Length: 269
Image (cartoon, rainbow, N blue to C red; front, side, top):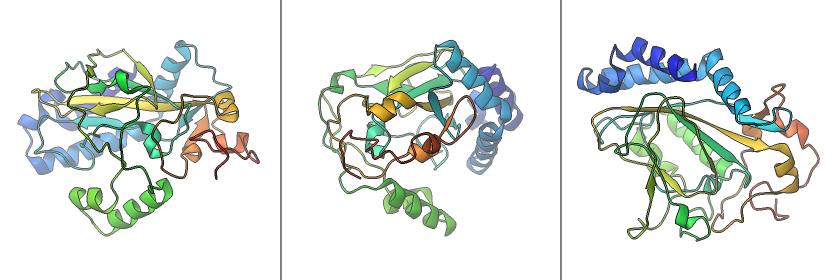
């Protein structure tokens, strides 16, 4: 149902063959229609409901699980000429570098079929290997403040990435042995936020459409369970972005008064 909803909305905004819309629309039209599509999907009441139902089928406990407050639709066109803020991928990273809790899980799902030319790449060999990165001194709250201010002044995508860059790997890992994920609509990939991964440059001929959501188990959060922190030095946390599955209550309400560091599992604020 989730994939069908995404496909129907994509056809409404991008035409009868959405995966080839970049060959029909000019750049301005494509970016405008893509932005409208993404807003409609994110705000559609059935999108989150369908994905939540899929999570429950995997065995997620709705009384102990929190999900992120927003539900994005990723649109990744081929090449680089149509890359803007709403169509850009993310290079090699761990989500932990972005100050999320160590026990966070990511759930990723395609809307249309795609092959290895434009999907998600995992680097499992780095599960226990640190990677030099730029997370030291990076603050999630400061990042969001800078992004909001820059966006309000009409900053371009290039300006945004220069004004407030996200933490990134300091090396390209030329000798790594990555796994390129190939999936079909209806598949869901679950992986830890500690996994090193990247959104590949789309070298194929079709647009990649995907969606994702992130979850935190309340018990894991309170006990500070999760993989070890190998190389994350950022500050702040994203716990305020989550709500409980079963009643929509803010996750922060469930942990009020607990003195925990959600990211590293130590006692730092």
